[in-house]
Figure 1 (cartoon, rainbow, N blue to C red):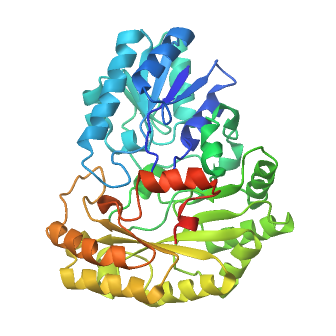
Figure 2 (figure 1 turned 180 degrees about the vertical axis):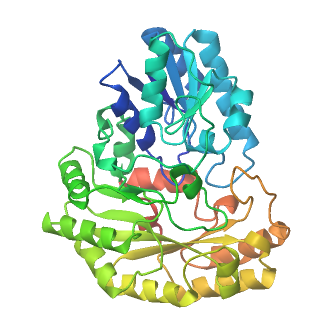
Length: 429
């Protein structure tokens, strides 16, 4: 079995394919499994041809992480890159081609047709890929599309019920990860739960992981961080949950477990302003948190309602104040022009960012409402971009990926040249 990670996005920093490493761990007891990560390859097609020739795999799993880059440019070019990789696999090997990954799970039918694969795994892949491979090894003909809940051929449904016991999963095979990720900034990714109970208008997480939150044991999470602390090259941890502090009690317990182990590594996480008060911020700092990323999104109460965000602007200000008091750096992300936001509301969002004065404020201009639905871009998109081009360069800590404002290869080169450790945004201000 050869698992190929197709993600080549390196901005703002390269991200190790944690999902692929979890699937590899599930497969290892039953078959020989290798991972080819194309992120750092100067010629991904040639690297793929070489590995296929050397390994002669029976099955190739092609993992598609995203359908857009981090500057939210037209996704067509990225899908074309995936299609070219699939063509290389078909030309150089007789292996069964299986597609998977978060990006694939959002548009499985379209990508199956575009890439011409034999099978596709929708949603979480640990059990589904294992059962698919076992069926193939028995000479059976599995369904074209399978998921953790529909391996036997029942209709595939995103957001379907999944196994609840994440602690039963084999830990990710970090020994198969490309060492260049740690060489870049020393950040290892850790997942503490799956699922998100929120209904934010544009977010894919509930589709991919379900709305039921399935939690790992806080002590096991802390043990994993402690083990990473003695792993050569690891200097930071990024908790990659959709929202680290939901449920609040689970986040607090993880922080207490980490503090009890002496806060083994500095860490960052995605958080919601909801319930992020002085007590939780202090617990996070005691557990080693040095920064968090908040999806604040908009600077008006009406905008929060339209986006179905579960918090208010008062919650945003309270969370910012709590983080500041605890010494935890804050990065706020804003999605401008979403759900019909007017240019006046955009200006009010910029005013909110000014008043918060965070370590970083990242501005994304709305392009679509969920990748699977492919809704068109904001009607006032060009006006918003002109406004950002005027105001962002003159404000400290304002980042506009689409315009290259404090975002791009130059930042990556600076991180590497200065030997900075941890997520690059911690240093950008």
